[in-house]
Length: 446
Image 1 (cartoon, rainbow, N blue to C red):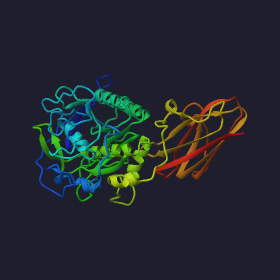
Image 2 (image 1 turned 30 degrees about the vertical axis):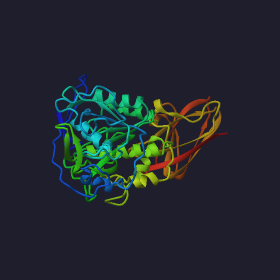
Image 3 (image 1 turned 45 degrees about the vertical axis):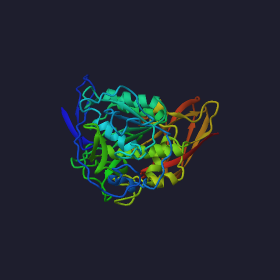
């Protein structure tokens, strides 16, 4: 079966769904070019800056970027490093061999220019023009087909090179275990993964992966009137929106520039902003960077969260001034295999904190110790509220030992272990009706 979805630069991503035992799905990119027209005021010297209306919209036009810092890793179709926008640009490296011919590199080159085209007197200026950038070419020889195996390899290569913001302007309507595993490893190693929500808003909003995966900051597209773009995919997984209509980009087709639409370009705006924020506030962890971007977003549409724009439109000025949210550095701890240890035989009491979110991080799994013949009490202080459950050996109803009877700002779970000392698993989830909550849990035995 061939499934066609529109993602990124209003380009067609063709995914061949594999049969059992067949090769992994392939992602195919086809991108049109459009001629740009003059627009608004400039805040940098490059000639196409007046057309970059998005600069004022995300409140970057009055800011001075920091120097090089946390990298942005672009896993895409490769970059044409000979484009005038990138020739001689410092701090831009290839993580693997880039194969842009004959039309490969068009999409990756455009995405890279939105992130970090420098102030060099030509073309456009990216949101973080002094960013450290890295490109992994996940395409085949013609540059238009992206196998899931290569996408996963790109994510892992980027993550293992050190923490970075990893941009994924790509997707499929089917999840892929290799990509999911690579994202989990990237999160474990401290990177932030940013993905485009997809361009299927006029096609029924089918699922889009990795945008719909947990631990991914998912970005929708808006226009110059701060309205959600009609093509922008809507879902419960959307975290934030950014401009994605009439975006001037570098094109590798003829080493010039073009005007493009798509969540492909909303995503790198957020990725570049995240790297800027992380560079000037290096003590943040990846989850805090993502949470600041959500909390500081400029709300549009219905008050609060909505499936079209998430928590609102990217506002870099507000993000830089936002307070530091609670850390959630133990991620990913979503199952028994990745459970974070809180108490042990030698230390049967302890405290932990974190954040859970219905779609982004639906549960935290914590390994705890149940001393023989003693009672474990867990008290969770949260905002707005969490639920607690204790499991013996698997996260199934038959293995459940206890659960909190009431949830809210102060939630309590108690369990008396009448047998020998043993390990168990405490699961923290958002309380019923709560979308996202922070918590601090104290564990004691007596």
